[in-house]
Image (cartoon, rainbow, N blue to C red):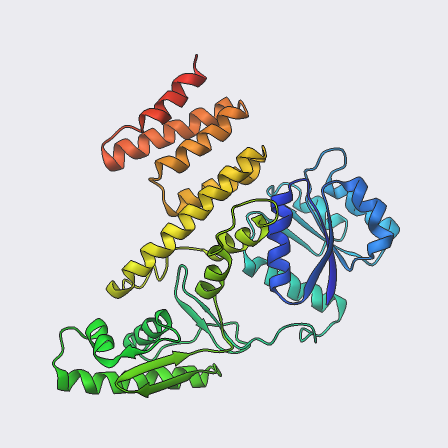
Length: 373
């Protein structure tokens, strides 16, 4: 297991990077710092294998910090994580292993960690890494990965894929045969649909077995049952993080950040399954409610950078959310960022006028009028 430190003057950025790194199973974040001075003071104590550094920080920037770190411990790998690309050339002059641009994705981190392991001459199969028994992504594009596989499975037919998605939505529950047939083949007669169902089940099971995914698919008393005891599923993880009744506060914010990170898009958004629409709406509402709670929490803490990050993520998924637009404008208003405020307001006004034929809400217009007094 590689030991890492993170240095960034924005705590939410540290939390997101930490989640992504530890999700790989190859890196443990042993400490994090909001200032370069604190990082240097603790360097000999923590003895990291790798340092993830922001570049634009108060007092000492990341490039200077990298040189100071290497002067103390020469074999520390340096990886820069920044929102700006103009420092790339200077970054590699200090022999940085990688230069990552925010916002980060898990795929970015996986590639960087693979390079890090190779540079360190380590085996990717760390004894501390949890076994990869396959994983399933339902938020955004529906993707099913086999055990220890980097590529999603290829379904023999679209109906085999749909059957698996349907049973996955009803995971560990008895599903009557007639309900499956009605959802997937509403236009077929009873005799023909029976043949279609059995053929599709056969093809679905063949794909799962070929991908080394452990599953239990059984038929008892007219009902089918699917269990995936060892497979990671993003919807299951999302529910485990987002279903807590605890308020957003210092002790729970990290857990809720994990939930937001999992929601990469609407549930099965590219598949168009009619039977999935109620569940799609339920997940969207849960994400929407949690994301707004998080944004408001960060605003009460005067952490407007974190609030803006979440609100912009909401707007990527729900571009017509007046609440999100209004909160984002309030962030700009409170920070007296007049240029950004006006630019965003004009973009919102044009969007609503062009796409919906309406003006923004009165409260949004009142904010705009307030900044021009």
